[in-house]
Length: 338
Figure 1 (cartoon, helix red, strand yellow):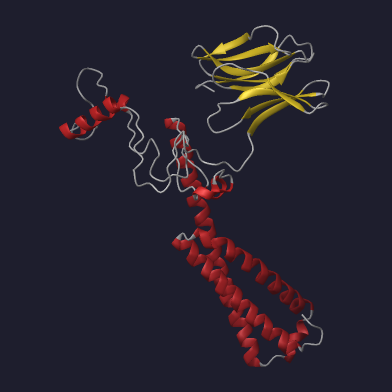
Figure 2 (tube, rainbow, N blue to C red):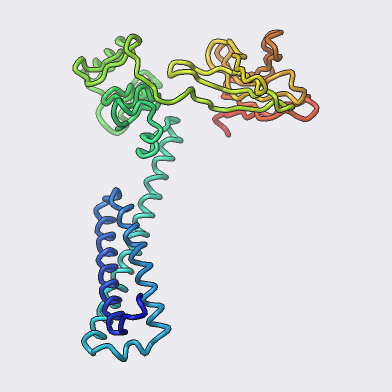
């Protein structure tokens, strides 16, 4: 507030700011009720600006209560009405924000529990997935399936019509699904039979706006994806888990930080992940698939010797670190029990 303003003008400004802030609180409450969450960011930015101005005027009034003496009875009445309205709008706004948070908590918990029960990733954040979009020229990502093949192609997710076929398997020869309704009719059974016989097919419509295949791949605007890395004990070498393109499952590469040369380290089928240098710097442990099982393996530096299987399991394994003497290796076993 300018020191040349009269006290009456300052109070008039406070009335105006308080009413504008009440308008904004009431609008935010309406946005919350209508679930128009996309408008919330703009509302919050305006609210921060007005709140700062409101607090400045209120502090001045509290430190100089004589300011009210220069205000007309009508202006004092306007100020009281503005404060009363603000208190009411603030209370309603706080209740709305609390209810929105409780609703969001319930929704997120339902998504998390559903994901846990079915073992299928079920949530993505629209802003984040589009910020990480590697083919922005092809259009925004509107939805995805868990495998996430070409997410920017609408209506092509492979699991939109998926069913848990095991649920239809009778335990005693009699169909039990749906448990509380009529058994599947002939049309449903025939449709499922056709799906099984047909198998996975590319059912992208011929008139799709974008079409991608081996001869017409999408263009990527980001460098190879580096998922994990580990420095050698002497700091000269860097082991890198890297995928060179969308079809590359990922291998372990080693970079000589002195010469600036990067060389491929693993050549197994499938993907090799989570490289961990041994304390002596002569081996790298990593996880990979081997004969249908997940394993933690180790291989000597320099390409000499075969891959040594250290641990194997039906579960996903991730090596974490070696003991200082190199005798023990800490790893994660992602089993259904833990």
